[in-house]
Amino acid sequence: MRRGFKTEAERLADRMRAQLGLEPHDRMAIRNLAIHLGVEMHSADSLVARSDLDELNRIQPGAFSAATFHLPGGRTAIITNPDSEPGRINSDIAHEIAHLLLNHEVRELQQLGGHTFFTCNPEQEEEANWLGACLLLSRALLLREAFAGSDPTIIAQRYDVSIPMARFRLNASGVLLQAKRARSSHTRR
Ligand SMILES: [Zn+2]
Image 1 (cartoon, helix red, strand yellow):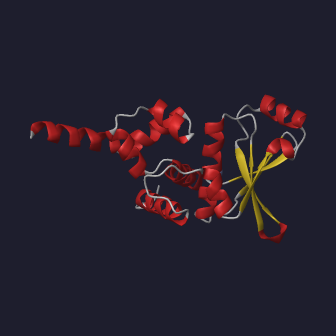
Image 2 (spheres, rainbow, N blue to C red):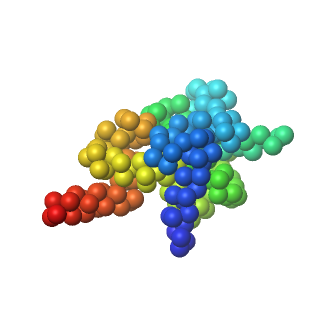
Image 3 (spheres, protein in one colour):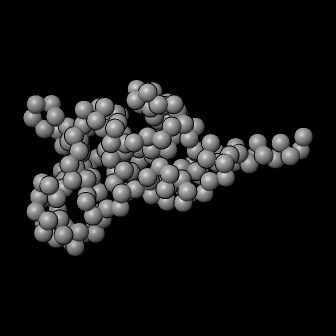
């Protein structure tokens, strides 16, 4: 990831919360952000036959998480996989919104099971993963939870994200270390 991107991502996530009238530590209902940005959301089974989705999941399990489509008339739609867990779907929506916020261009067309998929380059994927995670779990929010001693399971439940996502953000954001340091300096006094 390019230098400064992580800080930029946290700021962008804070800005999105502010636009929704939220504090930096507030829970983000990712679907509300999509609505705010004028992005439509559709479940894939409302667009293609259920049997085609099942076939796709069989050919390559987990191949389809979500995709963004730019439609005529300036409409943007995020298509999600109805077979994914709710926490995973939220991550997928956040990831797609991150691509949009970062103005990532659609780079590749992929054919799979008779369907066309758009994928981005690896660096952009990494950026979208990072920003998507910040949108769901901001640093301010994680810091509060770390001080409260919340574990990834509690965080996952409270914020409708997957447990791996909660664990990843707790570690990657550095809040665990910050909370631990604060506690030990408090004890020393
Ligand atoms: Zn992506």
